[in-house]
Image 1: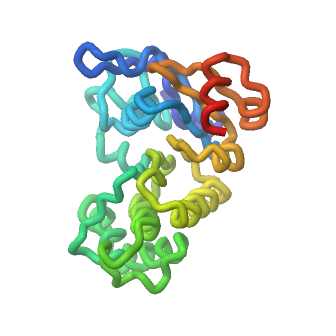
Image 2 (image 1 turned 120 degrees about the vertical axis):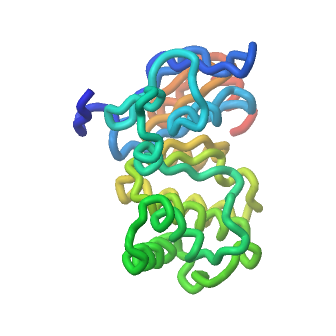
Length: 248
């Protein structure tokens, strides 16, 4: 399958995922065009995080298919390194190396995985740290940074691989309220720059503001989806209305 910009950059068709006897995803289909921002919302345990972990191959699937730029993610012959270069992921936990500075954390993957030139990598890493508004923190260790600052280092680290798509898995869930905004501003700027973003989030105001399309998942299925204005102001399914009534 040859990918062109007219086709979805990420395409999920009837994706099914089970953990033992528990079916977590029950036939999920989503298409994401290049440059789109997609927000996936829903109650805890609805399969949101599992869904995006399947997109970059961290979780296998039991049925259906997932394509990124025309390459099937779960094909046996897929080069996982090539996939990870295309699809960056930022988790709820920052997973930074505590004994490495912010700059060293951002530089590690391009140096170790891509075997790129150190001078070039350092130059790009410094630009990325500036991009996430952490200039002056290059030599700080994770323990010296706030949670929001550590999460922005994690975002810069993912961007250092020059991905085509960024996945965000509830990246503000572990943050203090005052540091949530600085992370969301960073993601908003990425979206404005044209980065394709798929976010699992509980930040409804943010989803309304930045998303091109909202997907509401519950019990392993997509209950309803649509553009933010339609979704939030004119939800049709009773389960969607109940969920929004509880959180808005």
